Image 1 (cartoon, rainbow, N blue to C red):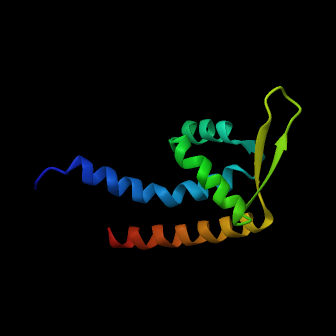
Image 2: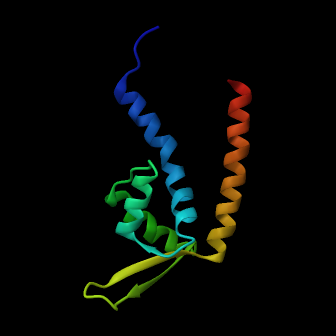
Length: 110
């Protein structure tokens, strides 16, 4: 058996993780949080995400109506807080159901 090409593996791992970041954000943001705190929470859970990936994703999910956002100007530095919307919670449930079904299918194949 030949050794795995690390570059190819990295690309496959990136593809695998891409969709999970959406699920992780929708799940985590059931409680309001701002972007930097979300980066830390995801990283602490073992899902390292680059800020240049996360912030555009948050804006896209907000445009899609899956997140709501509001500015907190109570502190010296204003922060935009995100929260999963009702529609986002419905999408999260659907994604988790499908993820479970896909996992079960893969387990059957291995």
